Length: 369
Image 1: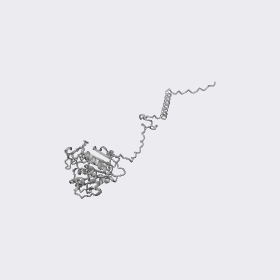
Image 2: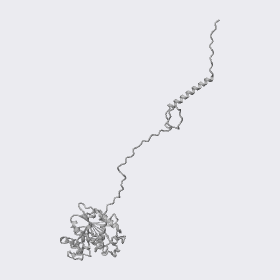
Image 3: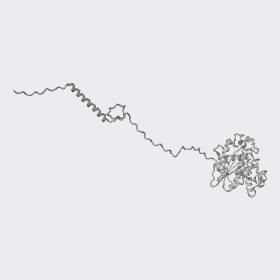
Image 4: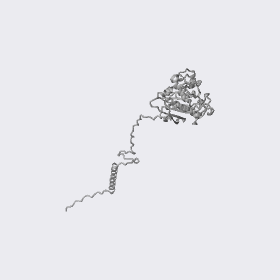
């Protein structure tokens, strides 16, 4: 009988080996998945603390990269530098008066009448030429007689100026307070702005320089020399100090911008001895206040006062007649030197001789000793 073949028996795989293989497969799959996730996940905006990476990974920055700052160009300096401080604007002086189309002649005197006695015909010639004439009287010329005498002298001056300009008429009064604080009274003819007169009305110092009982013996000389610190105008205005008075004359001169300034001979000049003390101080005040002004200084002319008696007569004829007539009109208001006509005026002691002379001096001619 034939026999059929029997297959060889299977070799059995141990269960432990199978389990080990399965575990290995699982581990490989897991590692592969982690690797793929690490490569494909998006980068976070905020990077956390540094973590050790497998050596096969490209290292990642452990902090947000810092960009190099963009260098801004330095600002180009502008042409303008720090502005230079400017002095505050000086307010226009109340004393200012324009003179359109002509030049200004300023005259500064101690007393009402000094101008028409010592400086004519220079003043009358300026008026005739159409120039503006601005006159300042520093003292009231009160002679210790009070306000009534002062008012009369001021009226006489206004009438004398009316005569020189060839027109009678009224004058308008303006009360001024200068930038210095000093008070002044200005009169201007109605309808004629070419002329004005300013009265400061400080006390008359007397020919002796000692002043008068009525004004407490206060004088310009004492003020100028420091004997008194201040004194008040006779009309009761605010007291004035020495530097304030000089500054006031300077202010008026600057405001009027005169081409020519007429005043008295100052102290120290060879022509000063024997003059009225008020004359000499006013001349010195004008010189101190204005001679250094490049615009005003060269035009200052100093007129010889009382000492002109020692100089030759240099006026006569029609020029002298006109001068005496102006003076006569003034004297009708001045009870001390009133004269009725030309002859009487020329016979008045000393005044008659002064009227026949007029001697202006430049700075170079003052002959300081």
